[in-house]
Image (cartoon, rainbow, N blue to C red):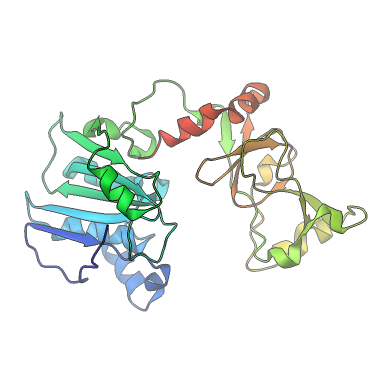
Length: 310
């Protein structure tokens, strides 16, 4: 597939297609960030998402527009209000989960992208969203072929508002209690300089009081993984905390049992023993530790979490 960047200035024609700008550096340019905060408060966290909001404002009543964007705004909590607004005020016609490597000319190979089509018209109660998923192939031509033959998914637009944070999910809605009722999810610590603060445990004869065990990422589900590292912890971590690039966080999970989920594509999990964990993890501190540990190391956790997003 090939995509052509549309000019930033769009007219108010009834129908148009735009690929939103991705590079984060654009967001830091003088005036861009301020304009986004002033005119698009519900999507100000990301320039590409601000363009989704801007396209909605540009489109006349009953006009349609298509956008290629990162997928993150379809489920991140920061964009809940934007999703709610668009679900109430626009018809969601089509959602294609393109995944990474979707375009021949894109230089952000790993970006998880989505192709969406909207109509600027208030949806009926029974309006259906049509979606497809072609994330698996890593060759753009293969994705293009699959788009023509893959089975479609159909979901009721109104029911999306009933999802947690109004997340967009075209999967069959599961009834039951949310994981949040059984466990708390916390972000881990950011060292800001791993070369300075992080070592493998075998690099030191013993782990003294100046070091603390560090829980890091795992590549696949395993009972005890990601335990190769330790973090510099002189003066109880005060020296690390004084680094302006560091964030010591997730302390409420320390010294508790649970599971840790690596925020990578397959969401691999491992048991958590209460150590300091790095930012790529979500330590889950459970009410019922045994049940949650067994659940976390099974395929059910990965599949259940993925139902929360397109």
